[in-house]
Amino acid sequence: MLGNLGKNLTKTMKKLAGMSIVDEEVVKEVIKEIQRALIQSDVNIKLVFKLSKSIEERALKEEPPKGITPKEHIITIVYEEMVKLLGEKAHEVEIDQKPYKILFLGLQGSGKTTTIGKLTRYLQKKGFHPAIVCTDTWRPAAFEQLKQLTQEMNVPLYGDPENKDALDLAKKGLKQFKKHDIVIFDTAGRHKDEKDLLQEMEEISSVVDPTEAILVIDGTIGQQAKDQARAFSQATPVGSIIVTKLDGSAKGGGALSAVSEIGAPIKFIGTGERVDDFEIFDPERFISRLLGMGDIKTLMEKAEEVAEEEKVAETMDAMLSGKFTLKDMYTQFEMMGKMGPMQQVMNMMPGVGKLPKNASQITEEKIGKYKIIMSSMTHYEMEHPEVIKQSRIKRIARGSGMRNEDIKELLKYYNVTKKAMKGFGRRKMSGPMGQLMR
Ligand code: GDP
Image (cartoon, rainbow, N blue to C red; front, side, top):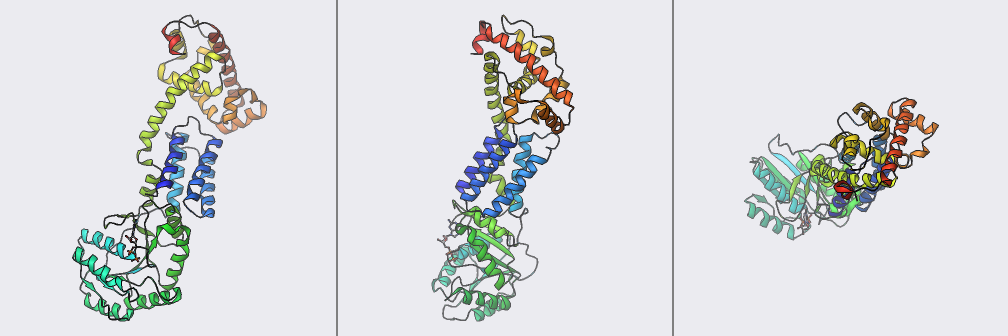
């Protein structure tokens, strides 16, 4: 569904899940990719910027809750803000009175007739017995199309191709089916001009007095969906919306976000031509799928494993070449968490002596503290620790909630370790560990 939008967003989220450090630069890049994907899907540009702004603000300001990594936090923010854009909750059709009168509105070709069939099947499955009234006097084939549809589904239909009075048809249909639990009214989707069509909708609406007016909108029209929804809702209060043709439509994101601005909830979406290609629109589930969150957790674990292996190899290389940055030290800390103290790791290397005292003796508490400090640094600072001077130290201290001395202590530890690493690199490594690291 929404082929490309989903593909692009999932790709972005996967990339994010695979990153080791998430800083401002990464957040901005992720937002840029989301913007690109949404604009390609014809989502209104103002809406896209509003969304990006709220994602950026939250991602940069909010602290991740306990037990959530910064990366998971950003994924959650993207998810939550996108859900908000679509109206948050799923809405059911609640049949709470008899007869429940549903008035279907929508332009010709929007998929109204097909959708009536889909909703009828959906309600039948719930144990209801809908009946259908055809008030479309404009399109000659409308009655025939409904006749075929209702015969297949064993649903009573009222209509009269000879009668050209839509209001009269509505009245008679209502009378005939007043004992049914649900009566669905199909209406015309075209007239001489739009004004006449809307005028007729207004009149039918006053005759039928619908419990719920449902507007069907073609999802392939993108942002224009908003104008259409506005026009119809001026003729009669639109209670809910169904967006059709979201299967593979490039502009679906545009239609969905546009109509959600109208205020009436999107209750269902059409995802194909068959009667069962129909689902309740649940913004949470929908966005989850669009972002590929269904398995984002496993994905994150997997990405982390792969990234971990790559990082270990990279760090080893960096350590031996003397290009040892704070990023490598961060990885080293993570490795230590998995493989035990660095001294132990070093001891496995033939020909490698002991690490200097300050470099080898580091408590878990310190590691934790250093990691917090490092997550307040920028990408650039992590790669070029030499630029961290007084003003940056102050900023990092403020950002991480530590004292200036703590930052200085970390930098000292880094320098000692770097020096020690350089020493190892010059030594010729032999034996299994040496091969392992080449
Ligand atoms: P109406 O003029 O509004 O009553 O539209 P129809 O119900 O006749 O549908 C117009 C065309 O859109 C038909 O070819 C339908 O098969 C197609 N259609 C309707 N809903 C969907 C949908 O969700 N997905 C796809 N791919 N096609 C749809």
